[in-house]
Amino acid sequence: MGHLSYEEGKKVVFKGLILLGIVTLIEVFIALLGKGYIIEGFHLPVWLMYLSMIGLSLYKAYFIVYEFMHMRYEVPGLVKSVLLPTLLLVWMIIAFFSEGNTWRNWRSKINDRPIAAFSTPQDRTSHHNGEDHSDGHKSMPAVIDSVAPQDTATSHQAADTSHSEPKGELHH
Amino acid sequence: MATDHSAHIQDGHSAAPSWSGGSEPFKASYGKLMMWYFLLSDAFTFSAFLVAYGTLRFSVPTWPVPDFVFSTLPGGIHHKPLIFVTIMTFVLIVSSVTMVRAVQEGHRENKKGIVFWMLMTVLGGLAFLGCQAWEWTTLIKGEHMSITRNPFGTHTENGVYLEGDGHDIKEGDSFQAGQSYLIHFHDGHYQPLKYKTENGDIKEQQMGPKAFGALFFFITGFHGFHVLSGVVFLLIIMLNVASGLYVKRRNGYEMVEKIGLYWHFVDLVWVFVFLVFYLL
Image (tube, rainbow over all chains, first blue to last red; front, side):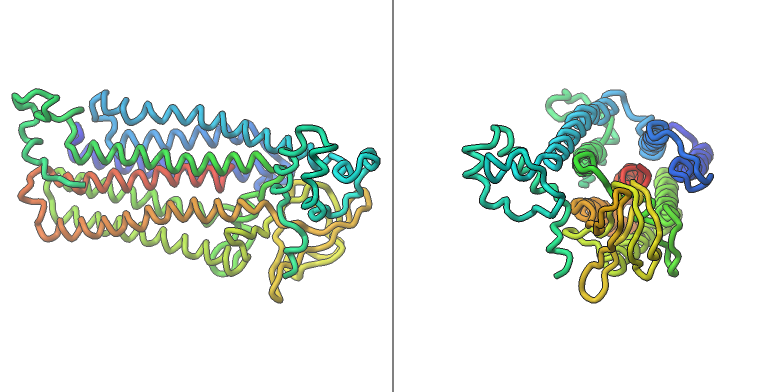
């Protein structure tokens, strides 16, 4: 549709190519600069790096939707009915990321917990020695019922799946 | 993508009341409006994938550093972080731009121009798919990542290697917490290296978080599948344009406009895949 003439439209295309290209280059530059690839020993603060890259990506998204997809020339009702629902994602991101954070906290607690706590009441105070303890968990449930605090049953399972790769699997 | 509403487009503001289907909501044809809502739903699918990536990344103490994982170029070039994906991004941007040109030629009913610019767009899409195929091959065949195995790990403490891997790491090399490594695969299994931590403990490299491989292949694969189906639809519509099928509809080649919306959306998704996987 476009409310632009053919010649004006061609200009917008050229502008878009340059703009998207330059913004992408800036993003890559920020990523490499921030992580210390360009100036030896120089890092950007993580929040600054992430915030600027997310902001630039959102700008690219805006440009693609409004100029290339001609959202600018649609009636307000269409614009709202397509764009407003995406605001639901804000809550989705907050909810899931804080959930992910909670999982990590649980896992770190599990790794710090003396593993002997799951065997006998007497052993509970002794510290585990950092050895691989991926086996020996199988016979736990009965012990957990009788001895361990209430929360261990659930959080223990969370930890079990978190082990990145049991050592035994490395050398098949 | 049915387009038989061209008749209604001409007299969109007929006398029939809106709720009897007499006029178009939002002054957009049925096909275009539905394409917008399809893209909205697709955006939610991709968002769910990317949010899942973020959630799992938040849930483990370490995550492979992207500029370490994605640092190879064709021709055996290593340690050039992000260069290849930047090229892929440019390819997709250029193909998006050629698509805008095709739509513009459509508005002035220039059949030859449409076919030419759509062909350029198809070539761009194929080039992108080729890049992705190379990237996947490198990860699967060269570095032995799969949806269940992720050899890219990250150190959580400082230390010194007690052995070398014959590639980048030599015996006696020191490393710092936060530095990533690749466990090489030869003789039928992964070969984790032994190292000594600052506290004097002897440890072995651990495989990285499993989910990384699955997330990478599923998300970039889902996007690549969108590119592939986009290329197929572009080709079909290009042939229809060339054969003159859309001429009698006299709606400014709206079909080209609709596939254009889809194609820009694929580019739009890549903006975020690029951000989440390669930049952050």
